[in-house]
Image 1 (cartoon, helix red, strand yellow):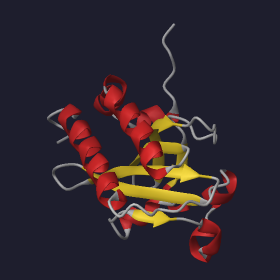
Image 2 (cartoon, rainbow, N blue to C red; image 1 turned 180 degrees about the vertical axis):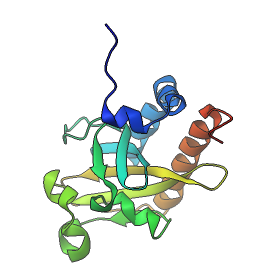
Image 3 (cartoon, rainbow, N blue to C red; image 1 turned 90 degrees about the vertical axis):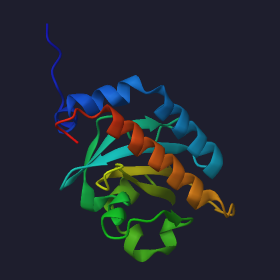
Length: 168
């Protein structure tokens, strides 16, 4: 019996899925992100023109965001990277009326967010590395934005290295 391909899997190329499956580093990076931020969820998402696709997730608090989940990109906090491609830290989303109104915030009870855009070495925006929590967080480490950006850059390089020559 041939396993069926989910809609989310169809949004990822075979090379992208292989890169995710082959790279244990992504899970370790996500664990490090949770340790550095103090947050209890970290994930890697790919952007399509309209969708946000979960490629990898580390979710010990079981927020309910899973690999292959697909959301409308515009409803996510990560969509901010399409407008402003710099790290984003929101210690208490409930105090930010614009972000607090996003459906994803209510659906997953998100109170704090830290994220960085993932660019491929050729400059294309691939998606986002993000950390979430249902608790308000303090981001008092002045090196945290650069560290999160470095992890995102590493993820971008890993994905790029695993893309087929026709994808590059």
